[in-house]
Image (cartoon, rainbow, N blue to C red; front, top):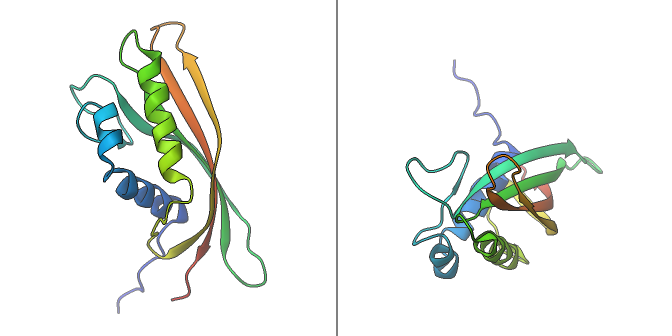
Length: 144
């Protein structure tokens, strides 16, 4: 007896859709040194500019029997040494690309995606600069 496949996490589906969509943009690839580098961990042996998925939270937001989730998701862009602008340019390009983006999520439908903020910070210990995008989204689970 086999178990039915487990539903895809709405958070993982959203992250995969963002990554797939951004990966096709040549301008973003140029800003990141030749390829779109976005993931969970820094690319091994690579210097910035690259981006990492950061803190995330999903909350149940179901209505009228429809499974919905409200997301808060961070994407942090790490700057080249001495160039905070490199992080800001890449973060703003990501925000522009995701505005009204036709993202295709596995097992879910994107209802809304908004860029809430871009915060620019410099780490006091390392001096490393970064720009963090805060994204808000609503997804609905597609019926099986």
